Image 1 (cartoon, rainbow, N blue to C red):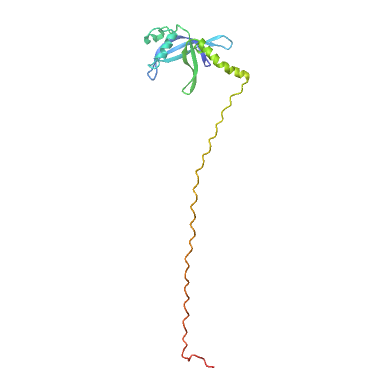
Image 2: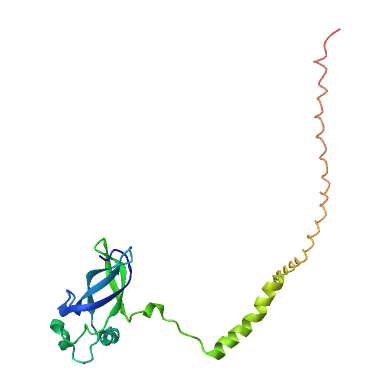
Length: 201
């Protein structure tokens, strides 16, 4: 039984068209899957994949149908296990998927067997140029050459402050004008009287 994500060899055993709730046409394909066991033996399981086919996905879907063995151009032929989709063995890329709060294993991609391990060999000239570019760096590592010093940024000189204006001179204190003293009023003259007021001896 498939219990872990990974790549599994598989072959279609039955398929038919179905319509999703969104109205998208999708081909429901049931695969017989080869499951490696811990003791080196091989178990078997099945998994169903719903392959949506729209104007946006038709390129990928066509490549998948060709990979599985279909050579026609009328998708109606694929209904009710028609079209020879079981002609070739494929490799399923099975991954965890979240649906309605639950995790389940789901077919993410249908690939050519061994496609995940394909290696593209470089051209001889490209490999030779790459080796020449790396040769100097490798020799420097062997020689223990010190790393190039990282340039230190030179601090920018501080901007000179503009000269301050001299303070305006303080005006001299003004001397108050002298105030003329007013003469005290003279005491009123006393009346000498008639002599009647002179006390007797």
